[in-house]
Image (cartoon, rainbow, N blue to C red; front, top):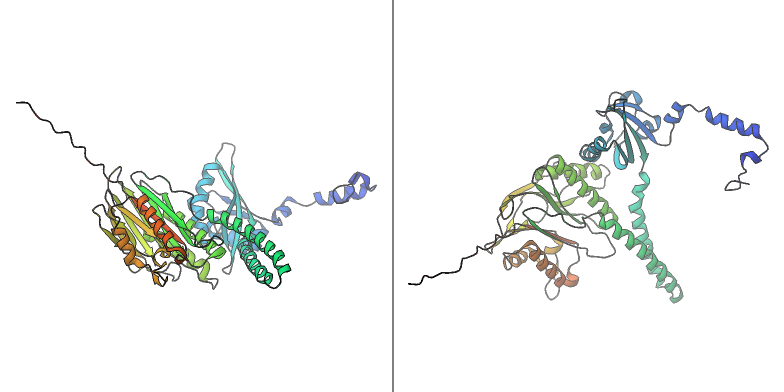
Length: 448
């Protein structure tokens, strides 16, 4: 019998001595040589992260010398700013609880300023008494994953070229159309899966608050650039944010993913809104400006502290280049909550951040939105922009209203724009439920 590929079984070669010699040569490889020259990176650290051992493969990837690393650096010193944030807020706590982690995506810093995307697996080694001794970590080069988004864009361009060529002749057009539609279907399926990873499937239930959300993608065959989230932080506080990244498609999706997870990590590290946006600004500026391709976003980030059922909720906001939040009050009024002075996030090293605060009493609703709403083209000729004044009047005409009622009304407004709505639009509303009306006891009378 032969092995797969026509290679004869060792027993059938008739040359047992040659086979034994080959196996003997393989067995002569030392364990140290296998460790140093492995096709992946290896390192061992003390429980405080100090690097005790590292193989030549990883040193070569990062452009480092062993003497400058062993005993002098910690594992987090090898990571980027975003990687360190994720390590401190997610990786390290989970490793301490579970004892091992597999396939975690991080970024490592190369000597000279480059970046290396990696997949990291780690396991804690314990002593005979069960005490943790050290952490063994395996690092795999994940550079090829970065090519995924470029591949999505390439397929879209190929589909468009195929569609243009199809117009040249009827016979070629039919064949090209079928190919283009097949590519389009595959691209749409890939984009749909990727889009689902950029925004939460649903909002969590928040004690003492009502919430509602709506997300509209301007084109079904491209990734949206808007994002939002709502999640708990320390104590009874909840963090929420909504924003809009520059660009569309795979590049915008990459920026959206980085923005969303950076804000979540930053909020757990320091839940103050201005601090979270400052961290995001530093990460975006370092990630993109260093590569000569500046990328930025607008964002509004808030912390809400509900006071229990039908109690007031304190809201603190920070914004960078984002439209002001709209507040619908229980007395029937509507007003903007401006955050003046906020600069686009990611443009400058130290971007100014605008802040504001308010109290939501029972029956009040706070509405966040992206500029796809206010910049929608309206009017008979679709020549006018809807604008913030019209939105304020729209909100005043419906106050007071619950978050669900507001989002439902705004969704109807968006649908009414038709083809005048040519940008992605996200809506996020939070409100304190109105206090129930007091029950008046029935009138009684006494007989004389």
